[in-house]
Length: 309
Ligand SMILES: C[S@@+](CC[C@H](N)C(=O)[O-])C[C@H]1O[C@@H](n2cnc3c(N)ncnc32)[C@H](O)[C@@H]1O
Image (cartoon, rainbow, N blue to C red; front, side):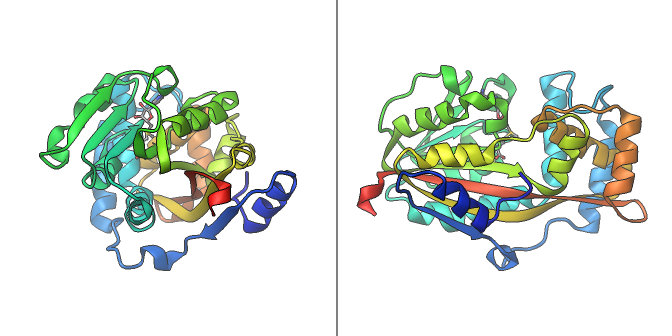
């Protein structure tokens, strides 16, 4: 998908005869404007140093171990304000609209940064991740002393969870790890565990340079429209917010690692030589400075029948 547009969503939804209600909003610069910029010269120099210590994979898009993957995730999230913006979105848009702050489920918490920001409000936090190291890295000290922290080392679809239990379920940059035909099952399973009035927040990157990178290196184009269409048939209130995000690097090695992780999400792969050429001809901003762009979409599903709105 080359970036979701309001018109596209309206067309998409009107294809479906079932009455539904979807609000769509582009988040512009003003939404994040009160926040200090993170990508400074100092940060870019730090990334250049850190990327030199990270082994270059023989095939970009593949990782040799969980620790190689996690170290690349760490570099990746420091090269963009997308993570910080994601946190801001949850704090400004999602948290204030919740009716209670009892129980949070974070599926695939990654480095736990988003969990840490959002989780401070909650009394009970459950984390699900198939990678043991991910769960080990997220410590009780990230949260309030009174917070109960539970960790489930499994894939989400294999996990048995209580019904009507969570106030908020986060599925942020995780859905790519499930086969596309299972995406709607993931959404339905999450909704069963959500309290009435609870919120399921799905975050997905797509479009622009990321989409083109995937297309160029035999990656997947993810069926986001299809997910929205199928979710709209579940008789729930849906809101979609999108913001344009960028990744920056001051050297080619950092950009190679960033693209390697995007390719991993997109199930594409590239040898170093081809990826270097592609980066130089598509992302070069100035002398040894690179930028790539994409959309970050937030699909917010409220667990209430549509009649209540
Ligand atoms: C890119 S990270 C997401 C980080 C975090 N949610 C955020 O938004 O910053 C993807 C996470 O999904 C986890 N993951 C992969 N397959 C999964 C599955 N089947 N069930 C749950 N989590 C999964 C990975 O181990 C990793 O922690």
